[in-house]
Length: 608
Ligand code: AGP
Image 1 (cartoon, rainbow, N blue to C red):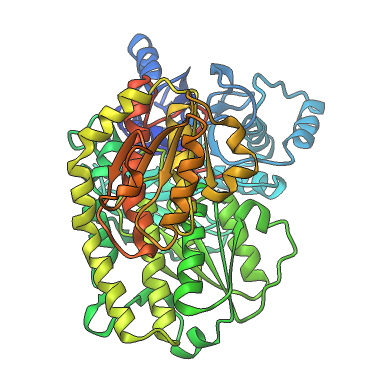
Image 2 (tube, rainbow, N blue to C red; image 1 turned 180 degrees about the horizontal axis):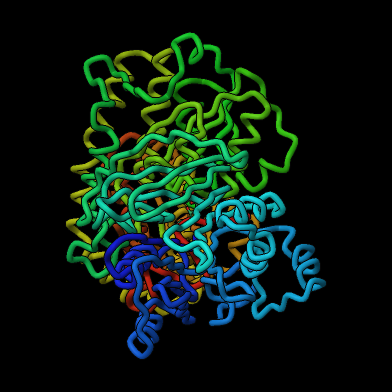
């Protein structure tokens, strides 16, 4: 979740580093810094807080040089403070290093270095690694970095420069994304392509265990045995505008309004209406393999775990295969039952979430076939899974996941359709599902056109201290997702619950100050949800009801109604989640919260 940028070429590196860090700020932000080699030595500038603070430092004490590295930090060791900001310098001032990840044995390494007279100015594991490189330096920077990484245990994405071996950046990755950007007479390092997209679209993704020496006129990738590797050059097809806010106040709002388009992109070329089928090229599972799957495990974190819960119902409903959903952080430490006929579906927008990556590796170790539902092309999960379905939702910059969630649900529906039609799902039912999928983008557009109604509702409830979200069946996960959206950007406590379960505890919370959001489309359990609404009404709860058509049963019962278009029960989460995204967004904005970069959160959690 930290951001790393490096440059070596003929231009002054500092403006390029700052520009790149700003594009990465969403990944992790409580301090930032740069280090520059300029022929007279190594200069570092660091500041706590946003990158604007670092720019103020540079305005007062400028730095200039054709080789530099930069970093935005999301604290893992040591509080946010200038002394803990990266880059860290070695004791002799000749080496600067930036790091994303965790060196787990840093305390023991620190003790050893202290015994040799090294002094430390920060609480970080990164400073330990920097001094270890100094200690092991024997003439070439890449050799010292490799030797230091052999002694460290844990995860890293690092970039290192030194006055003793100028003209090069040494990069290495294990568990934290890193790539090399190829320019004409200049080269880049970045933890995310968006940092350097303005300068190059040709990148080389490093794999775990790779190192690279990057110079002005070229680069070399090698492994921990110093064997040169031939990594392919990838072409980035995102437009920079996709990354910019496009006129919206926040990335999150832009991404909510992109959903008609992103859903179309997720389905593009994948729905075969006449056969009631889906076509998924990248899953790399043969017809026979698809038929031998007798268990599905879906593992993910956060919002992706919510879409996993919907995927469970979709696959069991359409393909009649037993599915279990596991928090990735739990799965990786359990002793799960996995066989060669197990399909492990791994859902991750970023493709870099540490717990999810570890869970996938554990499933692979136990013999499962793995299928990644990932948004970021070239991300680690996407490159390590056995097959995958890219969401094609474009970069999701807002920390709160929105368009990725709806694309995940659609991708899961496409997969369930494929698995079902390989089994007993009829072509008639398949065509009905396929058509309902194709109708979704226009239906989402209808909901977005009524955003002002949601904004007015947000005005009414922005000062609430607690919210309850209730749904049944396919919309119990929708309730969980709605609650997560609200709490993570507005900091209002919100809980999602199965509507019927509310009687077993949460009903004690209901009073006139408790807004209760019911997700109650006209699905198979609508009448049951109406009973739950009556129970809340009887306790003076304030009821916001999301439903799909005029209903006399709701008259006099609900305080506010949000209408969504009708669709198949299994697809209602795609439509129902959009008003809930908007409600959370508008409430957060009205409370003055930092919507795109909520406190304590990062876009991609690449540490345990
Ligand atoms: C969702 O709004 C959060 N940002 C968070 O729960 C996120 O879904 C989770 O960290 C998983 O991220 P991933 O999909 O990139 O793996």
